Image (cartoon, rainbow, N blue to C red):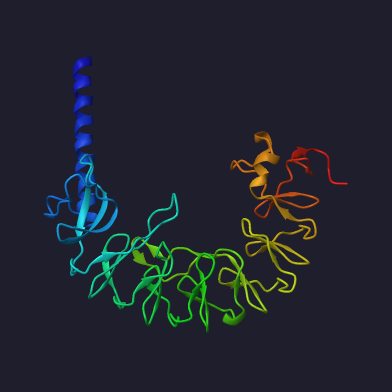
Length: 324
């Protein structure tokens, strides 16, 4: 009975492994549209490993994607309508520990972009198309500017400049990603890296609404992301450049929120310094210590850290004595 049970369990494990391998293989080859090298009749050169990206292999333009389970080989997808003789992929560098974004390539006839699940032809001029940053988040041709392969309506490639993060500007407008900001272009400044999320969702373009971040301003207004913050005084505004904090003469802000009771005169961000200020016994449950402090409290984002009392720092040490 015991041996019979062991055989059944062993057989079940084998069936499970075979099934997972089969469905994983189908996922690579069907759901994502990837083919193995043998099925696509495309073989890399001998002893030459194929890296993730777009290549020309044996006279054909291909996208080399994820590894096929248990083979050590990448799935290869032919780039349809590509002219291999004039085809070239742009060299793109993505931030460390960051998933690769859109991949771009051109030939004499087309601009190609590898999105999450497919390769598309971009409505752009291949003769003048170029990337504006090493990761390819911004690009342009002689007539248009693109953010992550999405056309920025009305943007002028002749005067377009990328600022911090996803912020940019030309002679007429300020932009966050592919969206136009309600700011004056001539006096627009981005004090923090801008970010816009959910532009691509499930491999498809998402029309919004978007979550946006980053302090920016013009001569008369202050914005967080694409939202104007009417309570901020532009004349005394200061971006504290950490975790979305800012302040003016009257208030302290975390992103779009006023931190009630925070004192702008003594408020300061701790940045990475909180790690040495606080022993593990008083760190926030998330594993971080407070991000900021004023004369009365510590703050984790816009939450007051009351549980540890009115601490202060002396010579880099946390003490229980309150501020005088």
